[in-house]
Length: 156
Image 1 (cartoon, rainbow, N blue to C red):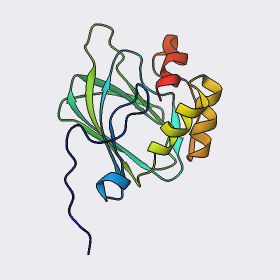
Image 2 (image 1 turned 90 degrees about the vertical axis):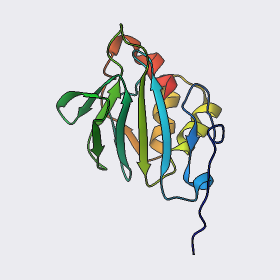
Image 3 (image 1 turned 45 degrees about the vertical axis):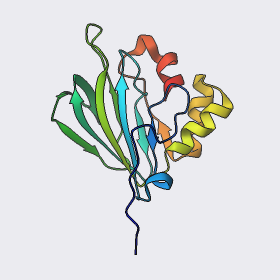
Image 4 (image 1 turned 30 degrees about the vertical axis):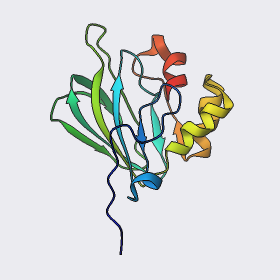
C-alpha cells in the first residue's frame, strides 16, 4: 500500500533559476508538481513531450499559452492540459505585468532530470536542446517572446 506524504513549502529541488520542484521521488506520486512564477519572456520555446501530459492552472496573472497553432490567454482559475505529442509553449508575454503564478503538473514525473542535466551542461541553447532530447522533449519552434529566446532557453 502506498504511503501518504507531506511535502513542506521549502522542500523540493531548485535547479538554477527554475521553480521549486516537488518531483515524484520526493512526493511518492507519479507526477511532478511545480508552482512556477514566470517573469516577462521567461517561458520555454515551442516543444513537444514524448510521454508527459503538461497541465497548467493559473493562480495569478495572465499566462499566454500556445497549443498547436492556437494561441490563447489564460487568467486566474483557467486550466489547460496538453497531451504528449502536441506542440506547446507558455509565457508571460506582458511587459507591464508582474510574474504570472502557475501551478504546473507533469504526468508522468521525471522532468526534473532535464534541469539536472541542464545545470551540469550549461544554459546555452545547444545545451538546452541536448538536455531536452535526453528527457523526451523536442524543441519544435521559438518561444512566445522571441527577443528573449536565449534567456528563456537558459531558464528551461
